[in-house]
Length: 287
Image (cartoon, rainbow, N blue to C red; front, side):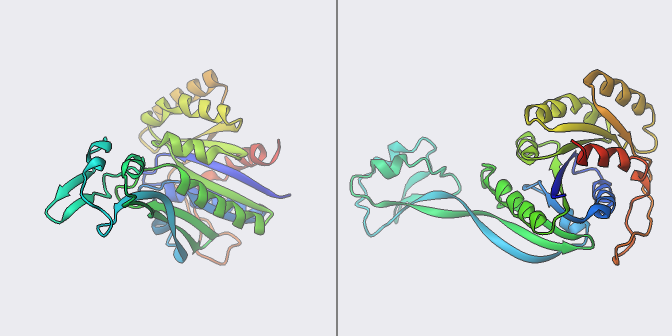
């Protein structure tokens, strides 16, 4: 056996998301090592929710920004008309570029006749390797105001996959935020199974689009019904939608229970997924 990649597509604002991932990690650990990756580069909180301790934090250079060298600039102003975003302004101290607005299109760089503009590397965020009760957890965070090109997500995910390869046999569990289609698409790359969590009517409405994304990525998909108590009527709708989409369905039983595992760490939340896990595991490991 080598590694298997399980992508869990879920609403990251759902209060029980960390507990579901904790349970999946505990169950997957029966087959080998587990590496967890938080695919939410905007507001991911899994490391905090799972009480993970940072072991390595790496700055990520994900782009460039234009900057004027005042010692070379003669103030001709040609760059002012070249910038479609009005990121360049004439000030009392000379011409300056606002890095928060600049998109590094390089129009001003090529327009400047005396080469007074440089394209500087710009840090756009960080990726972090943390440790928690079940092993390694990788995450990434974009700096405020930085564009999401997907590069940071892919770099951090590659780090997580490399760690899983080194620990094989292993399961790489990727938590993809359902409200970020670009992130879901990136997280599905190379996956063996997409587990689509249904916790609300809104999740149910998005099931078709998520299933289509998995099909486009040629990844097997199945739904996991995690509807909380009080939403039991939703389960009939989930079954009907899954039939229409030809999706296999597993059902969790909330509330999540805590059950001791072989891990020397604290007890893990596995009770609610114990019955659903064999079906998930079979689709994950058997092609």
